[in-house]
Image (cartoon, helix red, strand yellow):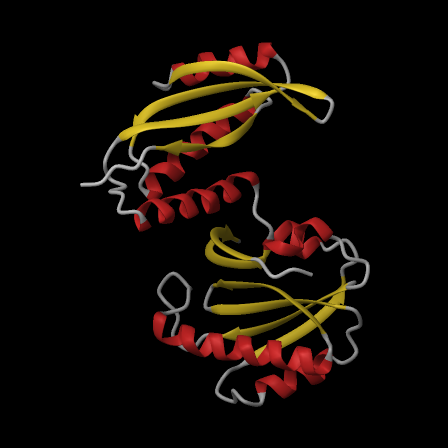
Length: 250
């Protein structure tokens, strides 16, 4: 299993949740060697008003996280796969080959943090549903993750993300009729279509379109913009393929 972690926000049961997950294992899911999902849930001492962790207490959460992973390696219990922070609680999620030593793993780790109230458990999850349905992001959530990576890269190069500029987008469709339907809808939103093109994909031909609009690529602006494009492309049975823009410095 590779180590490649991502993090994003989403609502769970109507409350904001910060999700961290190991994206590196996605191509190998479900893994038949690890058939039990296990968790440790701790109650935060002083969470933010929205139920997330404060900067001060995040250090303690990190220490607990490291200790759990250390003991899981020592007991050869399993693989740390994700974390959820929501409603004043932190849930650490593992996948195990066998779960009979999970209680020993947890108790050995948590004895170092007697000030924290916690609970733990495990159950069989051969299809890795917790990973796929709870931790793993949707298409829209993945786009937000990608947006923020791009925004961070632009900022590191000195870009002023608040400055408007032409932002180019691409989307793909299975036939020209769906592409033309999408073009009409996107033009009604103020976008200008630059070109149409075709590309081979899995023994099929995908019908692409490149389009642009003058916008600001600041984090929340680009999130709102790309969510709208995904909504329109999905309504036309298409797939949004991301954006790019020039570097603008002040």
